[in-house]
Length: 458
Ligand code: ARG
Image 1: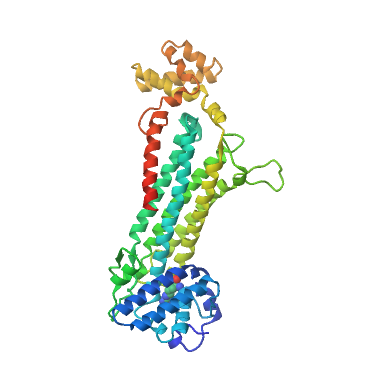
Image 2: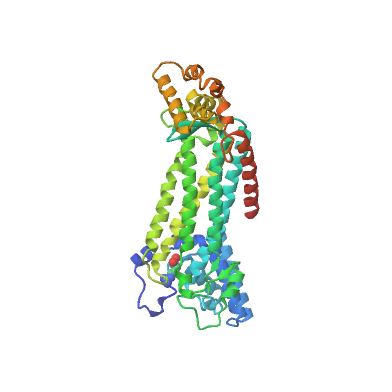
């Protein structure tokens, strides 16, 4: 078995060493980014005079062929290919001979792998943002369609005040909008090329890292070669941004589990987005929503596990850093699958407006409106709270219905109309509130923000 570093070693590496340390099993996924990095590097080497133009062309042709072999599944991996970087360099050297052997001039896998992973994360962050925008689009459409449908707004999972369904859906939408912002922001900070940092210290050769950075479409090159090869902030930030998405999906998922329960009955899943039971013929289960709830735990594990890997690492590159890839790949994959599944689920779920209204129409849902009525007529709020609380307690004790007690109370007689089904939600008029007026304004604001984000990631 031959490795790229066999020169100073006496024999072959042990099988156990290769089995434990090789990353080819998961980093083959970086192949296209590695080839892009090599193209940029070899062009730079040509322009600074380290390779002749003909050599550059030979290496570029070998990279093209390697790319085709990989894409066609015809690439022959060799036993010594410990990672995708060595595999590609080996093949390029086989194809381009002496010119291929110059590809790694002034480069280390340390700056190479950091470059590849940044290219990967930069692209994937934008792709996740685009998927999140599609989910928000669905939430917006469903909010518009919801019209004046209302349901209980909960605190402590106890009915608190009625809210428009549109308001409730957009609450999830705004959380996802912040996620898009976070992904975009992480993307700006990671847009720095490490290529040219070498193993740790730069090079005695006349490399031009700015040229390589521009060639790869990075906004800037590294400022410090040690930082360039050891910095994985971008991986940690990407993991955190993805974890927040997963947490938001888990909260939406929990909502769906509750809404579709027979106890609530607020919504019904489309058959295509529900699952059955192997034993119970009548069952229709919200498995997507449950897994959205569960996978957030896995994402948190990927994030905290990787932070623990980084903690206390000395400068600069350490093999520990190879452990950045699996959590990052997994978090991207899980979030992508989750966002897409939730997009389908939310676009097809049926809302049961009558059941929602029934749950929100209990006279006690208007208790705060009664207190605010008294406040509007001059009573201090703390006193009004006690007056209405007393009526609620008496109705619960069985003295009379809350409606009857309100009608009989001289201070509240005219407030009885507030108990009419559908009225309380219309009384939430303050900016950002849950009633029809502020929600109409909110819908427009959300739409404008979404359109701007869609243009940002078009
Ligand atoms: N497979 C390694 C990684 O993913 C590449 C860098 C190895 N560098 C080294 N000096 N051993 O981090």
